[in-house]
Amino acid sequence: MKFRFALVLSASIAALAAPAFAQVKDEPIQPIAPAKVANKAMVELGKKLFFDPRLSKSGFISCNSCHNLSMGGSDNLRTSIGDHWQEGPINAPTVLNSKLSLAQFWDGRAKDLKAQAGGPIANPGEMASTHKLAVDVLTSIPAYGAEFQKAFGTPGVTMDRVTDAIAAFEETLVTPNSRFDKWLKGDRKAITPIELAGYNLFKDSGCVACHNGVAVGGASYQKMGVVEPYKTDSKAQGRAGVTGVDADRMNFKVPTLRNVELTYPYFHDGGAATLEAAVETMGKLQLGRTFSPDENAKIVAFLKTLTGDQPKFEMPILPPSNNATPRPTPFESAAK
Image (cartoon, rainbow, N blue to C red):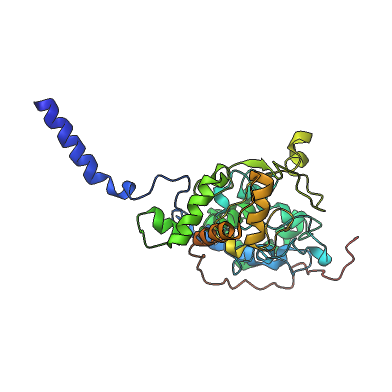
């Protein structure tokens, strides 16, 4: 009798404790949690560095140039524009929710946001500076020195600290509260019957094999062109460029589908200008399926429910340069 009472009591307690978790539907896609800030001073410093074009040789390009936070964390170009108007080799992935990916860049060559942050600064085809020059610029500005000390507890500007701060800011760039997340949490009216039909089609067709989890992607590398080859002029090799293994050619990190209606054009080469074109191509190349216009429209309708709350913050006021600050050289020959 005591044992039975204990079971009933345990079940009752569990039932009372469960609602917060039971509200989330058991689906291959799960909702995003809001960002938690552990070091506000570091995040604020990282925000300034993210927007500061003086980290580039030209004094014109910032992280936000290619990952524009007013445009879904991307630049809406097929490939980004680098120093001296160089054409970038690949489409700029969104920075939003990027902390949820297994690695950074399409080929996964950076293990995390910190490792990624230093790459573009010294890339001659992107910001075209050097880590030393970037540090010299920041060190010459007393206000930055004070902010680094506040964020890290000790004085000193280093590239290691620069990338720590940028990564800390980027980790806050999550987009919770999409209409689909609200549906996952039990709000049946959050999405329409057509959008729900699109989600069921998305699941039943096998799209969730790659596009799943909190980020709806970003958790694996997959071959672009499973059923038939993907035709492109892009020279990007995917994981093969990192591993040196030919079998990894055209294997790319699966992109997140969060906020996907904002991050056009699509694919590593920006080859799909619209969501409709992207759905059609993925159906044929990855699934061996041709979606009807009605099916395509329903899937697109579902994908648009994945747009969440965009990051909200005050634009940073950057500290001014002074007489000791190295000057940008936007018109210096790219060959120098």
